[in-house]
Length: 429
Image (cartoon, rainbow, N blue to C red; front, side):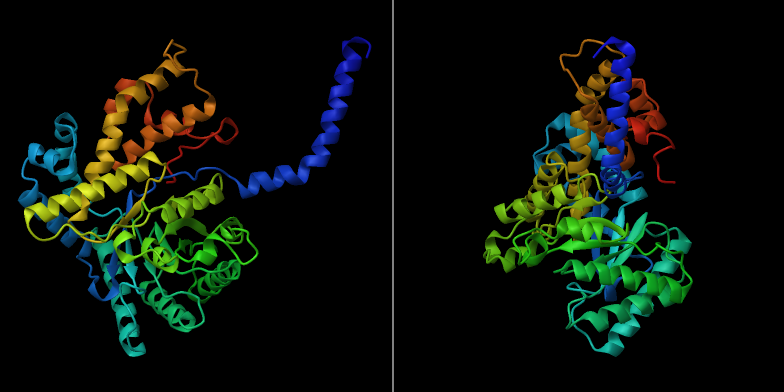
């Protein structure tokens, strides 16, 4: 090939040919894998049986959580001993936990019409659906709600399909336009067809109640073997996400239904059992890059009874929360008000302990200083994401973050996105 001009002409022609050949693949990648969604992800989802939900539920959980902390973890030192935290870490998180329980005890709340509510007469469930919707509206109006909320209705499996849809429709009819952060949990999913049916149901409900198209978004609850591996030997989780027409916001692991279906004895059912790790690994691969977030399940060992029993349950809960965070899962389920202190303590400790090293490493990269690491852009996005999550949940303050990194919050959020996706404030507001 003679001369620079000929070389440039050759490569430009080849690139143009490949652009044409790969245009469809480029478009599929762009639309199917938009990357991490903007905005805050809650650190947990609290499940409350629908008949026990009131407009004061979030405040009540906060009061009960603060009472549990005051009784069983009266000082930072006692709390450190209870959870197995280093004293220095406990000193950093203790006041933050107390402040969180006062300011925002619940980040995400799901009003449960499924397993937590059980089978009732149609008349009873109709009444509960209307009452719960009125209570949610009142909570939102009074400022006593949670930043994120929604309902879990009965599944689209044949035996519960009509009851579940009726409850969802009654709830929406009574509620009116759902508040920001509202999401529906679709349980016991066994097929891609059910996800497609949920998309259709969302469209019809939006049209019936005058809601904005696409506003009814849902989570897929992964709690059946069929959701992880289909009859054809292929996992349907990725097809489920891509069949959701952009409405799916999360994959939530259902620990106990899934473990029981695989024959795990009750005493060994846990979010850290090998079958749970396998399911969540498949969930994470299926969701990676799609904008769908993965959520861990719960522990059913509740912090109730005497101080010894409460502290043992706290320690277990904190360990499981930390284990999920270390594995890249930033959200889980909580089932009892006394789990809130251990949830926030574990989350805050995770970010506080990682803050100095991550902040220094990010600053070194941005200022092109020698840091002992040869970091790639993907790792930089992960470091910025770590710090942004710490900021969102209250583990890290804006001024503190700016001092350690030299980066303002908006700049930090821009760093969490690939270069081609940067723009906007990344807050989701």
